[in-house]
Image 1 (cartoon, rainbow, N blue to C red):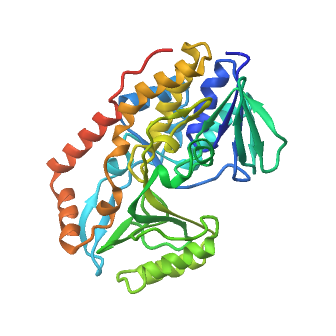
Image 2: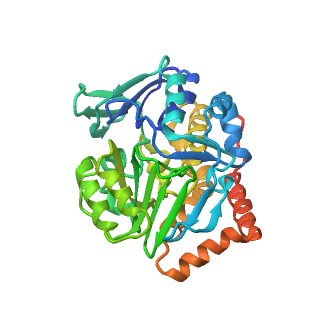
Length: 380
């Protein structure tokens, strides 16, 4: 595949993971990323099960990830008077191996930057397929032609919109929003989470210094406007007890805030001609617990099938989908919103009871590991 030139949109996890494999196979790879640079920090992501750890080993990055792992941190669920109601064990939220998204992205970038081209601060504006490739125009760069284009740019994928159609046809809002906020204030040594019906706020936990989940219908706002996002959080959490007013005040002075819907991608096919979708773009389920693992496994399979097919994208894309769709079915089920922000006091108590009775928790963790390993990896 030494003459294959591939454009990847997205420089978070799935994109650089695919770039790793394609450059090792001799492809010329360009990665375009809308952000002006790698995004630091971000929420913790995790890997679980033998399959996902095996892919990290085959990539040669398992030791690097272990070196920067955050380690599962126990989190207390408290009531309005700060009395402990239950404890979420770190191994439940952190899987077998947990790392900050920004650290994982940096590991992948450093492994690939010398072998492929990264273009930051730019975005694709059009895709026109011809008999020999895909003509691509950009917001800033000059037009170019590539043999293949990969959308690895998340649930709100620009590539999927251009190649498949509007987001509304493929992304289903699941009735909740979440926010990750980088606050400076310290709300205690122990990570804590507090609920009122339809709302959750957590501080010091594994996701971010401040983490929010709240029930809401679709909201109209600019995802790149931090001021708007802070105002939405202030309205959503008005009147909530516990330390919430102080946390919201800290949010007002925060440097970074990320607010997005809890949504699920539903798409009938992963490819359209010479364009293929990878990671959350194809099988995302926000806060579903499998995103990072699906991204690296998907990248391994997609690159491996392209190599096995000698660069014939029609054969490779069909086999990639045949293998990945059953594995990615875990992302088609479940909704983290009602679990993290139960709608009634009774449902909050029922959720807490699960963490008090180890047999229920153990069963959930065994099922999670089973789903994470439910694919037979080829050796390409």
